[in-house]
Structures are given as structure tokens and as C-alpha cells.
Image (cartoon, rainbow, N blue to C red; front, side, top):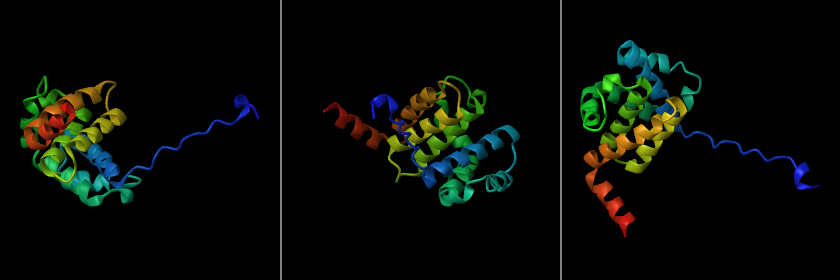
Length: 161
């Protein structure tokens, strides 16, 4: 069989982790909250009805959704130092992604800061505007330096050597 006649092997995308699903569903919930202003319990109820919810890391979903809503003002203040406009003027998708990334940087110390940033960038690529992921990456890199200075400094020193 010649190369031209061999079937093309199609790679199946890797299955999504339970944590990634939790982030995606939390993002949808935060989007609803940002646009509609419903309380966290109402938003959570809507998100639990989404197909595939049973495959998400429920504890992480709860932490993200409720943590981001409860601490939105604190998270927005951390973001405000590094965004080019008021957070209320950001795209709701990018705003929600930045809330999730900032929350994970501040509260999920078991997640390395680069992983938290990369996961936020992937959310922005999947759900956000064309170049929104670049914006998210730049902002969260600066937020990480504020919230996890020792971890960021150690990584940068290791890369420099």
C-alpha cells in the first residue's frame, strides 16, 4: 500500500480531566452570574443540570463557583493592577476566566502556578475571543507574581540558569 492510499490516522483528543470539566462548568456559571446577577445557589442549580456535570470534580467546581462569587471584589482588586480597563468592562468570558485563574492562584496552592495559568489560557482559547487567551496569560502571569512571589521567583531563577 502506498503512502497516498493509507488511511489517515485520526488522533482522538485526550479525555478531559474532572478538574478541567469543573473549570469549564464553573466558567459557564460565572458567565451566567456576571450577566444575570443571580445568586450563587441559583447558578449552581443551573450548572448541575448541564450534560456531563457528573464527570466533573464537584469539590473543585463548588470551590471555584462559590469562591469566585464570594470573593469577586477581592479577586477584581488583584486583577485591577494588571488589566488595561475596569474588570466590569472586560468580556464576560475573559473576566470569568481571570476570576477562576486568580482564585486558583490564591487558594489552590496544590496546583502549580504555571498549571493554573495554562488551564485559564485553555479556557480562554475554548470559550473566549480570538486573542483573549494572550490577554489572560499576560494578566495572570503578573497576578501570579503578586500572589505567589516565591514560586514565581524560583521558577524564573531556574529558567535563567
